[in-house]
Length: 165
Length: 165
Image (cartoon, rainbow over all chains, first blue to last red):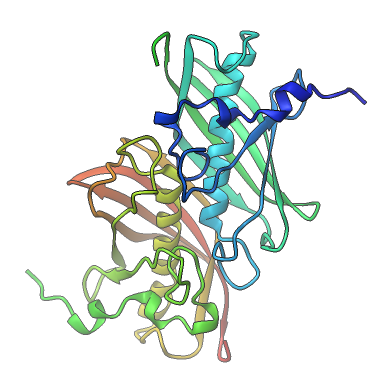
């Protein structure tokens, strides 16, 4: 089994975000009331990513089940961060290097396959599936207790690559 | 201009939810930390609906802009509540009558057309577009400061109609 690159895995993609843009409710490290999702490369070569997320008690749909909107939100941020990290990795550079790359969500499609139990830490796995000009299409799965419960596809749009972000 | 039915408009769809199922993070009246979205018929005849939502300061994407996951969550609950209310209205009965009707989200597609400014109360408009067996397809738009910023389509699935919910 290939050894992971611990230097990459210990710093999440979101940790590279400058403070003035780190207020995303789902994944910004500077949003005190936010969910602080953190996303990592699965290994040191692929374009596959992992986030872990423990739903809070209030994140319910019906009793015992995670809210579908929260799951969509987690998939959205997981995929956008995957798309931005892809932009750096394909160029063989770290996320704190210039020019900085920023993406936003153009569209997303979420398929709810099964209920997602709220008493587990859930895993979100993403992978870059296709790149078409400024569009980076990322697929994601939510896994709870070993079962894929939700699938998502996010079309991320690279809005700019700037030397002075 | 047709006069609205104030008896219907003053009680939101979500207000009919029994307490044990009113914990949805987005629209449950019994979730103390939830967003408490409320959805109403646009008038007393159509299958068109309205919700209003004032984003909280923490619901950011980047500064000044509403988080896309929150918008997807609001659209999801708006459409599911529209689908359930449709089930009652087509049978000409109130939502507190038996048999009760429950729907869950099978899938949703969200298109982000423009950024949604965080300093406005946003309006969500929904309408039942198609019914195919147990599937009720609801379209929705988010309107901020008079501009449509997001469009969504939710496939709601009627999971059961029970005399003893």
